[in-house]
Amino acid sequence: MRAGDGATDRGPAALVLSGQNGIAAWQEDLYRALHRHPELGNQEVETAATVARLLTGFGFDVREKIGTTGVVGILENGDGPTVLVRADMDALPMAEETGLPYASTDTATDDAGNTTPVAHACGHDVHVASLLGAARLMAAERTAWSGTFVALFQPAEELADGARRMVEGGLAGLIPKPDVALAQHVLAFPAGRVGTRHGAVLSSADSMRITVYGRGSHGSMPQLSVDPVVLASMIVIRLQQIVSREVAPGEFAVLTVGRISSGSKSNIISDRAVLELNIRTFNRGTRELALNAIKRIVTGECLASGSPKDPEFELYDRYPVTENNAGATDRVSSAFREYFGDQAFTIGRQSASEDFSEIPNALGVPYTYWGIGGTDPQLYAKAEAGGTILTDIPANHSPKFAPVITPTLQTGTAAIVVAACAWLGRSPDA
Ligand code: ZN
Ligand code: ZN
Image 1 (cartoon, rainbow, N blue to C red):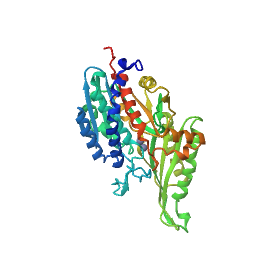
Image 2 (tube, rainbow, N blue to C red):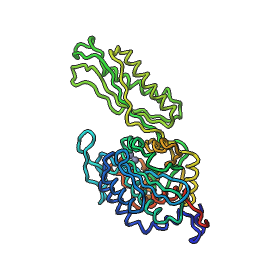
Image 3 (cartoon, rainbow, N blue to C red):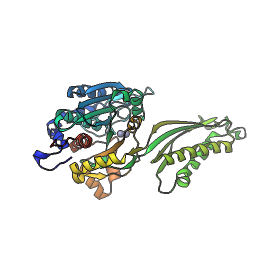
Image 4 (tube, rainbow, N blue to C red):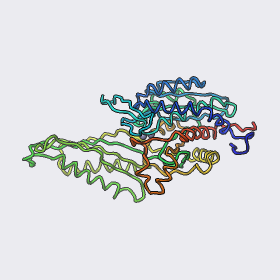
């Protein structure tokens, strides 16, 4: 791909993106509508319907209800590679506090049957609007590229099961096998910037529910009991030594006991305790080490307490490591440097997690995942100068997370087109 050689000799991505100004008003309205009406994971019925309607209008071949609400649009445009780009569609069960005129006031019913406010506090509405914008531009400028562009809209990233459900729903049989899979996330760094990284970019995450058993008794007769509260307390303390004493210094790992519950009353010794843990790592070895150490420590503490029944372990909300393919990342990074100039940079590893990689892993194709900025650059520069980034810049999942529309949408859209054209681009001379 070539760019910057003058208006008559521009690269294919620049040609596709020459239509960007023409769709800006439409795309911003689309974004505000998505933001105003967020939907929880596996309930993205209206969002998916909007996606399917628009893709059909652009001329894509559309498949709906994959997994739960998953949608794919396929745009065949002659010989050449197939590029899959994924956007996640779901929002979070929380109240929005951005004060934006297009803030969500919607509520939804969660899986437990509770009514909850809903907000696009992770920016998945940016992802949907960007991919739809890119899809529209790719469809409008088909002379600039050749191959097949697959736009995939995934449910339930926040529930860690949307990608898996699409795979189990027969995704592989519904699309041509891609040569590469791409995805992006809006993050709390200056809008206009794009960050790529080789190798592990997002951590794995595992949640684990552990039930340990004691023997119930009256609080005045501890000699008759095996006290699960004491047992669970010993476990919490002992688990802290996995990261400090078993994981090598410099190797990333987080182990948090986020919830612990037992008993009903001060003078009753209960017969069980439940602990809920969250574990994050950047490689499979550390992940296995931590999971095995947890089981060993819990089993050992149960034995030490004289627990009458084996502990039970249940893993849930599991996210794999997102580990970018070197070749695909090189190709995208150099295309980004060419198009975005010094706005393209190498992003640090993020201790957040994603289920996107389950799609390329199931299809057996390389992938790369990058970040785009969503924060007002002036606000960011001011916070950086004052050393107040952590307190003044709302990050993903904050009720105040509010990406600036300009230039976030333009950057998100351009990043998709530029990355896709790094495979699909046709030489302007051809
Ligand atoms: Zn999120
Ligand atoms: Zn997210």
